[in-house]
Amino acid sequence: MSTPATQVVDHSALKVNQTGIIVTVLVAFVGGALFRPLLVLIPLLAVVLLVGTFAPRLALFKQFYFKVLKPRGIVKPRPVQDRPEPHNFAQGLGGVFLAVASVFLIPLTFLGLALALLVAVLAFVNVAFGYCLGCQIFYQLERRGLLRA
Amino acid sequence: MSAQLWALAVVGAVVLVAACLETFRSRRARRLVLATSPSGPTGHLLMNGEETQPYILYFTGDSCTVCRTHQEPALARLGDVRVDKVDAVAERTLADRFRVYTLPTTVVMAADGRALHVNYGYAPAPKLERQLAEARGTSLRSAATA
Image (cartoon, rainbow over all chains, first blue to last red; front, side, top):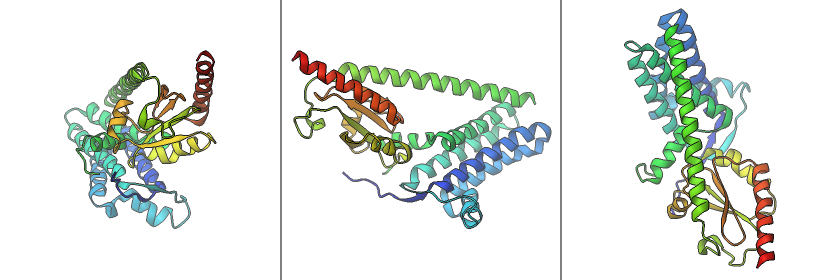
């Protein structure tokens, strides 16, 4: 049986990334009620996530962890033997949902906000309980041969 | 502000529906697995041929992070219990047989190869210990009536 090679993935970087998503969406969600231009954070977050998916070196929150939080000992590293692909896939999926949310923000604000909030809820579930819906979708696609292992 | 309230209502409804669907799905899968579980040794599942204790089939995969961070430490806490680790992607037939739709999935097997409990998603050590104790009781009853 051929299994894809695992490597060491720093799960603290993933947690910081998810926390960044939650905080940004919440600021846009709550702040947007008082100061509408703050809703622009949602399309910006979509861009950050999508860019970070295809060019991990440009992943804003992860780089913040690697360049600031980790060297200063603010967040301790948590290396785990893992595959980065499911996490990248989940991040990309979050980015796609936020991009769709951004499209809806002007004509149907509540729908755009709901989609963005859903991404934040899933990021919270991942931070709090370790359950990654995007990784489960990745598993299903891989199992059906739709994604290359 | 009303857009925010509507958005909260939509997300609440989506989460509620998703939770209900997940509960329905796992119950249905569990029921089907337990109903179709064969009695007697099941070839692949009994490596030693003469298993006398209940054991655990542990479905995992390389894409499963919870398996490494939560499930494997929980399985390690069980002590001297046989755990057969199965790659759900590579061993697709076996995974389909136990209707594995999420990882991790743990199946508590009786000594005779019957599936007694199926846990879709992370199963903590106390839950597995309880299921194993029940499986040991079942095995003893089967031995007594044989």
